[in-house]
Image (cartoon, rainbow, N blue to C red; front, top):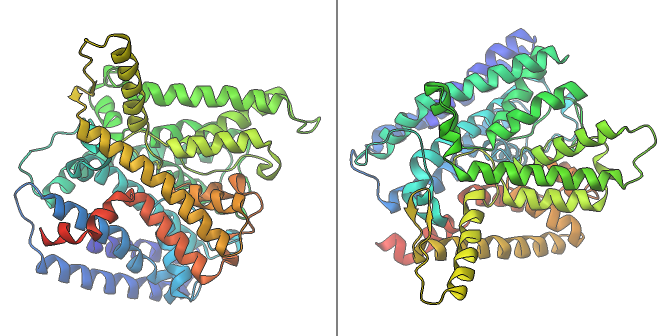
Length: 475
């Protein structure tokens, strides 16, 4: 992965040439050569095992991937002089790779276009990394009920770690590029420049939320752009392997068979209706039409449930009901196998099924009620794993919110910062924490806390706890 990252660091050199920012060529060249050199060292030092990877190998791989790669991805920010402190550069790189969307650049329109491209491109790479890990690697860890995930990609049960990554990359990357290109073309027709359309498309399909022209927490899209972005945000928040299967076969039944997507669409539509009702009863200005209020509801719901984080118009003046619904949607997140953050619809579906089974058991004490999800029996160990993860998420929200409070933030802002960054929706901080002045004004301690929170969210907490367990490392 470091070799791939190093190669990708050469691409902004062409952007620098096209925008006459030639002073940025050398920083990216140095970063690329250093990253490739160290990546080759790891490649020759660790040989791929052709056998199915062990749980220890999978968890160790996930830990070092999310912690180590941002170090090398941050090099262009530091060497270029735009973000001279390692704390700031690591924060920006970690935010991009985890597709959180939080940014140190309070006014990105003043930053060099080459760095803006690298930030969006890094976020786009983070999106495909999440898709590949979600479909090929994470289900093998059986963490948080991840073994219930259903992929449409063919996998050999005996494949090694590297082989599984390669097998997933080609089909998923092709679909990912296709959707990104389509989104970019449509955004160009909506009035965006080619550069802004490409950056926004990469931020949308990765569920990232970086934008080029706005201050943090400000909407810079016109109505047509918002209309185009909604379906692509929802696509990014659903299982990419299903989209690959549909485009390959042309058969819509791949979606009809999956109840998780149905749950996802249902939650989205309910949220839109509730938000629309809340806006109808809110004095939002006499010049705001009913159709515009509906548009804000659809855009906000799609941005929140996909954890993309694009904020709607006048985000700082929306009613409290919109903020609460947005927090709930961010917590729920997208489906398994998507680039979205959140607890995932699949896990909520299992918990709802368990509640239904318990009610049936109480009504029929001598009956046998079997629980099956995606044609897999839900065992007690899977249920326990999901409940454990839910408790860990809630506990983490409490601990990190208190930690932000100890650093001088009020409780509302602390909760907003925690939810936004733990569930990879940092770009939406301006909506769910309206009193927050921006990440650039944070202390170094708060920035490291937020960076850890973003990475912890992608590791889904329990992965790191298992890795830190002495007995696990000894075994």
